[in-house]
Length: 260
Ligand code: TYD
Ligand code: MG
Picture 1 (cartoon, helix red, strand yellow):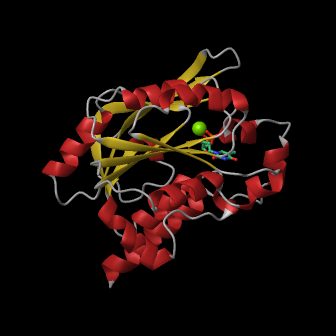
Picture 2 (tube, rainbow, N blue to C red):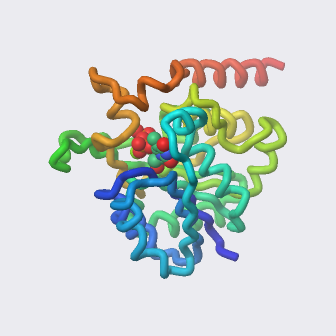
């Protein structure tokens, strides 16, 4: 049994995924299992993953998704994460994507925090967001700070910057019927929707250091959404629910709680 279970989702990022996996293999904290959840990527991506599969800590799963209809039916990364969560054995859960790199001491710092602060159920770190152009040059950088205890995390924190205790999972399942919400109206902000669930019970505790680098590439869902000419995938998505809605609803639920 590993102390930390990490779940990485993957779909067609041949140029980035090896770097993402390598950043996990290189962690100073080594007692982890990595669930590598691939959504039936192209051969080039699988080729980039293969060299890592000898590492006993890495468990590779591949979906059999074939059509675009299947791809938009559910938030695919939420479905893959839910599948992995049922298999995890770690005391702590952490998330990763195929275009995010953990800094070397990310797991160590987060585990230390959770071990020493029993009242914290969820921690998050600062993160550096890098926007890349088609030549892989950084065109813009944005620092996501982690300075405060956060009661309203949707759209403020990314799931690649979070670790939570696995003991919170049964509570979420009981209240909402699943861990992550697979409703495709939340494709754009699936992690925000998960945090909307978490924040109904717990705050997010800050670690001020930058512990991951996030890359927004021309392949990202967010990049595609911003383009004038919409890809087939984007065109087929249902209308997307908003950050504003999630944040306002959380705030109003919290206000009602304190008034009562
Ligand atoms: P990504 O394209 O990185 O979007 P963004 O960073 O703008 O939110 O996608 C997020 C994650 O979802 C990534 O790890 C890949 C995964 N994913 C699937 O598993 N299946 C899919 O069909 C798609 C589109 C994404
Ligand atoms: Mg991404």
